[in-house]
Length: 319
Ligand SMILES: [Zn+2]
Image (cartoon, rainbow, N blue to C red; front, side):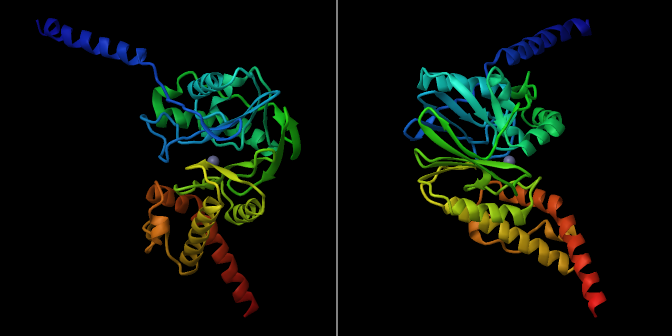
C-alpha cells in the first residue's frame, strides 16, 4: 500500500528529470559590433555557476574578405556551437581560423565546435592545454553542470608564431606575452585598431591569478599600454576605447603584490591576510573582488613567504 502511494511521486520525479534534460540551454549570445567587421560576445562579470553556464568570458570574431577569424571559443561545446550560429547570423563568410588567447577553460573549451578548422595558440598554451585540459574540463563540469555536457578538450593544432598575419585585408599582429599565464596571446588588428588583450586585461572585475606571475604580468601590461589601439577588448568586462582597463588591472596587481609582500615580511599568516586591510574603494568595488582576492592569497602567498624568508637569510649573512 505504501509503495503504491509513493508511485505518483516517483512518476512526477521521473517526468521532472526528463523535462530537465529536454531544456534547451541558450547562452543568448548576441554579437556586439565594436569596429568594422569586428564583434565581441560579452560574458557576465561573475564566477562560473549553474545559471551562467560559464559565460563569464569575452570572445570575439573578425569578418574579413577571406573568412571569419575567431578569438577564443568560450567555456563549453554548447557555447562554441552557439557562437558559430551567432556568427552565421552576422555574415555568410565561413569561419576559417580560431585563436585561443591562453589555456584557461572559459577561453578554449568551445574549440570542439570548430575542430574542422585550424585552431592556433602560442606553444606554451598548447602544452598547457595538453597537460591540464582534462582537469579544467572536469572542474567546469562541477561548476556549471549540464551546460558542459558533451564537452571534450580539443587541443589547438597550430603553433602561433608572433608577428603579422594578413587575413582577407586585415593585418593581425600576434603578440606573445606572459604573466597572467606562461603564454598570453594578444591580437592587435592594425587595420581596425582593435586590440584583443585576452586575460592580460580585466575590466570592472578582479583579475584571476591561478597561474600568474605578477612581475611578468605588469611588464606585459606596460607593453600593451604602449601599443597603438582605438578599441580594447579585455578578456573579462566591458570593451573600452581607452587604456583605463589596463591601468585598473595594473593597480589591482600592484596592490595585491604589495599587500602580500608586506604581509610576508611582517610574518603574517595566510589566515590574517584573507581579510584585506582597507582595500581602496576602486579595488573593493570590482566584481567578485572578495572571492577572487582570497583565491589569490591562497595561490600566491606561499611564494611571497618563501621570498621573504630567503631575503631574511641574505640579510643575516650580510650582517
Ligand atoms: Zn585566464
